[in-house]
Length: 117
Image (cartoon, rainbow, N blue to C red):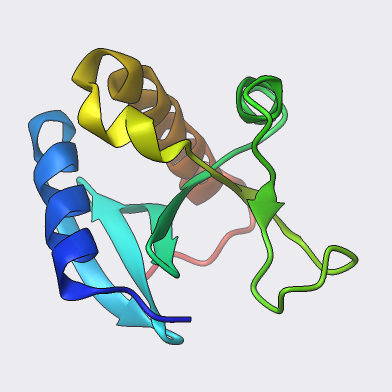
């Protein structure tokens, strides 16, 4: 569970046009925030976006799967799905995924009963 400095820098640069981006170390990976919303994570030089029922199918249609923090397919972290790496190099393909992940993060933050920090 590592993220190379070059991959981290590349991803953050690619995401900057879409939101105010911040990255924070998290359990050996990197948590990515856009406009203050936790919407993506980096692990093993891969990026995973926050998903819900409205966006999960977009990733599955591309043959992508959930984040497996323990490497065990029986224990996925289904709230985050991997983005194909080549999407990072194509802003037109990347933007809709960023926008949807930010929207999912915004909805999750607004859920009733959720603690506000």
